[in-house]
Length: 423
Image (cartoon, rainbow, N blue to C red):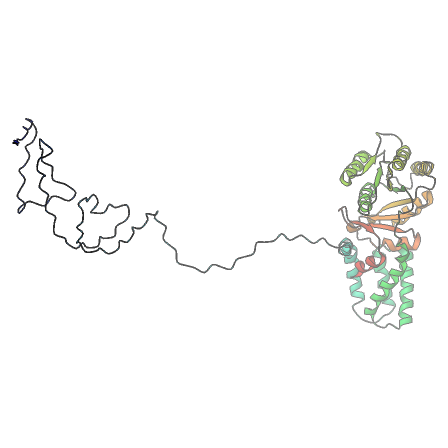
């Protein structure tokens, strides 16, 4: 029928080992299968099936890191159906990067609010005026403190008060007026103690300088022409720049006329102020001061300017030819605008003391002053000169300057001045 034979192995191939009987057949290693016998026909009997190992309950596998292969990896033999159910497998932990050791929990300090930007408060005008009069107040106040400390009101006290007022540059006329007025107030009110003199002196000084407080109004004229005058170094150009800022803050259109054609760099200084305030400056290289002011007024009419500030060169009252020149400037302005200049303003340096009274008289006689500016009050201990002006030539004091800032020029207030001088 059919014959069975074995294929001859190759010469150098290893001879297969005879399979053992089922009773003594060794258990195959895990993960391997017995090799199938080589047959010559498809009808050859099937190879003997290895006997399955007895079912032994498996112990739960030890939990290992995900990166370590399990010991049973690669096992392929089927598990008999009769094997007892294994406990549910616990999913292997997901491999994660090793984390830093966790620090013990420490209560966080209370959150500190972020520092807020504090806008520096700008000092008020009263505070700036007090700071500006600090030198005068320290000189006057120290001396008055000894007088007003207490004691009897007698002639010795009045003599000491007279000395204090004179050293504050109030002048002889103003000092005699104040002393007489204080005596009268003491008599009428029946004052006995020296500490009560302070109030009487403040009231007397306020009554003396009160008439100088006349604010300048630029309404009703267009353009309103302000002609500036003063001695060399009084601060005319700087005061013009600050006045431009002041009137701009009131919504006025301002124009500057560089009428100081004598001093070196005066034109450039005024142009710098014009650029700082964003206002137009009419200037000429050289030329005549009167012609510059005339051209500025004509330009202001054409452009609808509200205020024209006309600068002039500094001069001493004793320089008669220069005083005649400034008179000519005023006449030319009157040709450009018949009722001009509407304000003739003299700039005074507070450091000049009693010499300021002489300047007021000379320029008033030449030009007919309508207003004053007292500049550099913060750098002088001679703030009492206002009382001297009020007594000898009471021209309205329009503005006082107490610093270098552009906002440190303000209208004069008699009450604020007296309070800043004594308190």
